[in-house]
Amino acid sequence: MKTRTLILLALVCGIAILLAGGVFIFNVARNKESLTLPDAREVGTVVEVGPYRAGVLAVERREDAIVLSVKVVAGAAGLADAAEPWSLKVRDLRERVTVAGLPGPDCQGLEVVAGATVECSVAFAPQEGDGRAQFAAGDDQDAWFIEG
Image 1 (cartoon, one colour):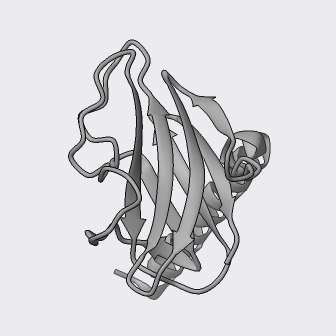
Image 2 (tube, one colour):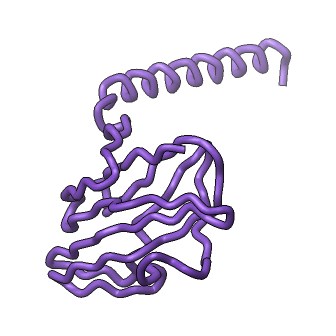
Image 3 (cartoon, rainbow, N blue to C red):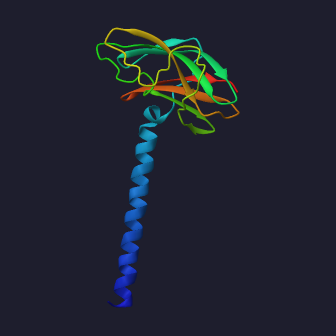
């Protein structure tokens, strides 16, 4: 290929990249509401998240884990694992861990049948600082502020 052809191809690729970036920025600006995190709720609040009602009832910071005492009320659909929808972010996403001496039954592997209410504990790897506990059900999610 000639140098002139290569330069023209590079210019066309550059223009395509600029157009794609512009379209992306336009879409982000248009969908800003759906891309923002919900305001974090206070511990003790139970709210509707999709077909469930969920809430963080208490938080215990220990040397071996951050333990959340949570409540889950299953709607028409049950929940195969009560721990699965929960996540915790303190600086970065924390992994769920298994620890002894939980204040309630372990959510890990606990099945919640349709219409049932379960209060259990889910533990995450320890980390200093403020964070957000989050419950996600499909496209719906809610979060609770965890003071550190």
